[in-house]
Image (cartoon, one colour):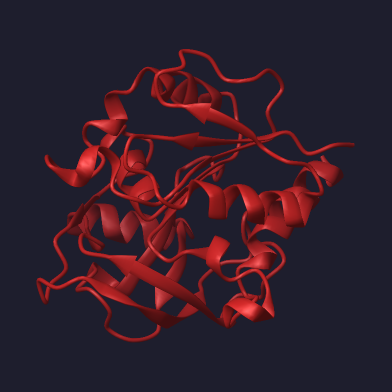
Amino acid sequence: MSFRSAVITFPGSNCDRDMAVALEQVSGTAPHRVWHRDAELPERLDFIALPGGFSYGDYLRCGAMAAQSPIMRAVVDAAGRGVPVLGVCNGFQVLTEAGLLPGALMRNAQLTFVCREVPLTVETSQSLFTAAYEAGQEVRFPVAHHDGNYFADAGTLDRLEGEGRVAFRYADEVNGSQRRIAGVLNEAGNVLGMMPHPERAIEAAQGSSDGRKLFESAVRALADA
């Protein structure tokens, strides 16, 4: 069975090609490339990715303008039907602004752009994005963001923790994110937003191949469905 995926490109996206390459390398099938002004997604998609970058130059609140793009109505509908959706970095910001994930991404606590490889802890293996990992496993992904400081109220944070919806956590302090949260899942478990870049860690030449298992998890979830 072929893996039908799509990568959404917004004005200012700069990791859309990286995401497309990662998906093709792992699944063997090139993803559809979808422009933000398109009103519809390709039919029978198995996976949707919102890549990193600086949509609309981040001139307003990061991801706020992209969340109003025509294609996002189709993405929200697809997520509601259970289609897996991954948002990385700016894509994570877009998912929160679109209401697909709780919380918000604020300016880094140190008010500087953070760009380096960081250690993360896999907090759950009970999701279609993390099934190939072990809970508690340490992985290393690159980060590159200025507004990655995850914020939510205490009740929301407790609910995320209690429901096993924290997918990844920074092993060390990176940007001021509450409880060092690096990635969260929606209630249904088919939407993941994360600041670190798994698509930049799929082969040894990139310095780490730890991100490959995230994409392998999604491909295997489809095959087992």
